[in-house]
Length: 278
Image (cartoon, rainbow, N blue to C red; front, side):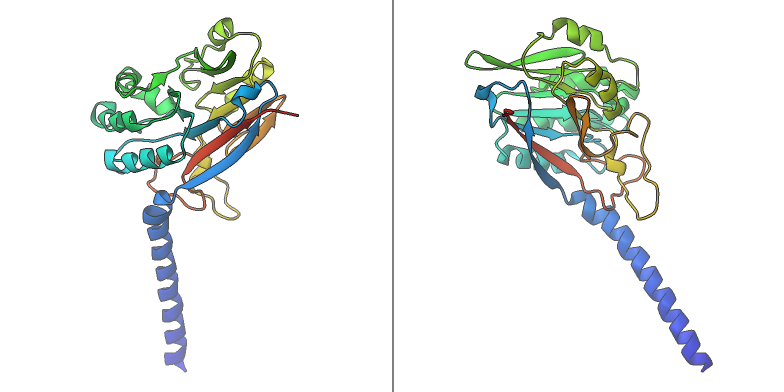
């Protein structure tokens, strides 16, 4: 009788340890590599018919480090190219830390081949390390960094405007500078690393869509456990929201920060197919 009770307790403890081990293995070695390609039809009220069907591929929070190597990022780039984007947008946090060591890994972004451009904005980790160096590496790779600037895309005589603000957490955003050069009509998309900036950008009434990252979707989502979310990512932490007349979308990112794990929150490549309304 005593032996049976001991045997059952031992089995329970063993199964518990096995479950924990498998959970850690999955969160560290499986899910971080299991990228979801999320396709979304995105109607923009001010979009010209010439841009209907335009494909915007968003990746975010690369976090180049010992895990996100140049080789791993090169596989992401290859996958993005397979999606045949018209435009690629990168919404910040290119490194976790030590830009001098890890920023050179971003040079593989030169292999991105959208029809038009690759555009980017800086994130809080970039601002906290060496955003000047990161921007230099990106620009050498053919990525246009929008520091409170606007890029114009053309199809025949119609235009689509893509604006970008520098990092909000570091107080480098200058929405007034963006609005000063942004034409008053035509579809406009805003790139802003921190998603909660949507409340400011939507209040202008000028943007159809804001694309953000920063939150990692929480990175770890456990039942009945509150997700860890960084500042400026509490209101719009994951997926699509309607903020006034503007749509806001938060990408879950590719890399990891703090802990090298993901659980129930797969890394994401977003494919947004723009459509007209009505």
